[in-house]
Every structure is written in C-alpha cells, then in structure tokens.
Length: 294
Image (cartoon, rainbow, N blue to C red; front, side, top):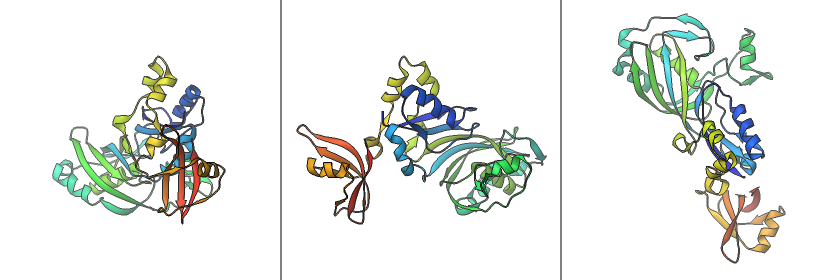
C-alpha cells in the first residue's frame, strides 16, 4: 500500500498515536505531514509505504484553520490547556463586528511573528516548551509568515469569544495570532480551540476518522479504499513515458537527458495494453533522475 490518507483528527489524541494505529493495520512504514497538537482537530495527512517519500513535497504549504479566541483571559500556554495567568476587561465596543473586522484587517499580509514559548522550535538543542516548563527565559527570534485572509465567523458577546477562519502560510502559529489579535482589541486572550480545515490540497471534506477505520469490517481495505495514490497525488504534474530500454536505465539510477523544464514528473512505461505508472522523476538542468519508485 503506497499513498496518503487524510485523517480528521479528534481532540486529545496525538499525531503519533494515529501513526502508530495505522502502522499496526497496514504493516507498512507510516508517517505524517503537518503535526497537530493534541488539543487541535482536523486534517492530518498520513503517509503510507512509498508515500512517506513524498513528505518533502508536502511540508511547505499553506493551511486553513477555524479557531475560537477566548478574550479577557491569558493562558501560560496560549491555549485552553494552560493555566490562566492574567485577566483583563473586554470592552463592550471591542466585541462589535465593525471593530473586530477593522482589527483583523491589520493582520492581513506578510509580517513577522514571534512563536509561542510552548512550541517545538529548538534553540540551542532544546525545544522551547522544555525551557517554558522549567520557567527559563530564552530569546525567541521572530519568523516571517503571511496571513492571506481572516474571516470573522461568529461573535459570542456573553462568553466573550470570537471565531475566525484563517488562511495562512507555513510556519504560522495560530496561538500567537490569537494573542496578538486580543492585544489589538485592548485585552488579553488565548486560543480556545483549533480545527484545521485544509493543508495544501487536502481538504477536511475528503477525510476519514479513526473511528470509521476501527468500526469497519476490514480496516485494511477501508484504508485502501480511501487511499490517495502517489499517481493521483501528482496528477497536476506532467508525465513522461519511457520505453523499456530507457526505463531500465532510469530504474538503475542512470540520469537521462531531457528537454523538458525543471520539476517533478509522473513516470510511465509503455506496455502492450497501455502505459503503466512507475513513480516520480525529477528534471533539473536538462537531466531526468529517479525519485520515488512505486
């Protein structure tokens, strides 16, 4: 089994837990692209078999989230898992739609963002959350990110919560964004919940759940039925059809000349009946070399 499935991750389960469960079912190498925190829900791409070799093509992509900000309270972890360390009044005017939308506009575009202390970013060989748990302070350098859109979905004046849809670049920390938006609303706040709706081309509407897998008559077949093959994953890439001689050279690692532009290509071989998908190849500076062979 080679390819990718999209799991709609439930709350309070780790990405590693899902990888472990899938691995036991398919008996193949399994990995994931785009870790989700235990408290977060939503789309988690799971790579199976040769699909794990495609992770390099899936890590630098845009994402879409839905998140709710709890205003008036600050958490030491910047999310609902932490302890409340500060409370501040939320002015009634700052919960009005017009005011919130005007604040959100300020966050659209390219900018620098300081990651939260409770994150897995490493500084001097240690993860930031390791420093945070010991109460140690460390200088955190800002990262370049981009927010493409921020849509206001709901205002709950009673609970002092606002729900947003966020379209952003790789490396964006929604927890930091929630804190920064709260500050611009002249208060404090934290990320109450987070649901990932889309990562790269993987939309939550095409996902399956672990419960569906575990409740199916045949978990292996259920996963296989919902598998996105490597061929399908790269359907937007151009194809190259090789004859049997060139295929033999290609599979043996011989670099072939090509007049096509640089990029990733689907590789096929002509057979008596039709063409057969072989895997992926990369062209760089007029040279075609093998990449992922299925």
